[in-house]
Image (tube, rainbow, N blue to C red):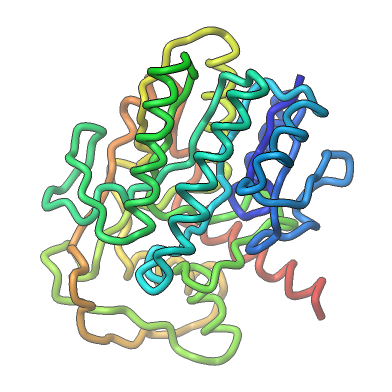
Length: 324
């Protein structure tokens, strides 16, 4: 028996694959490589190039590899861009999830771990986000993830699907120099790119009501995150009852200035970030608790902020050496 990882050639998905292998579970990957990298998939892991929109292909993959459960990470993950591309976002994230569920029902696969997002919360006006915090997404991306949760919930009610959805904020770091974040929109890659090109990274606003005046956000290490996806899968195999939703958060968060300080320390590149005005709509602080996930999924922050930056920087440098 195996576990299908949709989007398993992506940044987070490839770490989930590595964590499955470490746990002695057999992964299978399906990915259309729209943002993933074929080289992220180990040579001995079955890899199907295709989209979850292709229901017949998903059905075939589930049957041929005797899939027991699915960890669903495939999707369009750029919240800001989703505002300009709502139809594409909904097709990938809503229709894709619906088609995956259809294929699972047809084949009889009854376990699903869903990669959701803290974007389902929007910008809540409180210091610590819990699973009980009302959802109020502010982008097509956040809306599509919330609809995905609803689809899964309704299929579970109708057909007995066993499931959980994991919501997280900013995923950073690397568990291996072979795996890196190549997103053109995430903070760490943007800061590293600026430094390697001789530009100065920028902080948007330093007059927020936070200890150092810059925004505080929740950053979690990708390897810690991947581990919790696999623990959720194993708990399902064991027959445990899981909550429908878990936040994977630090409970504390880090400020943008703390990130810049850690980058300066790790890279050895001395710089003073440029300070720009606040961006409209940026809240001072958004941090999530991880208490429920700690109770049920063994969730914990095993890596410090310095670890996160150092592992991401090392993987970035390794990727540049390979490409040069």
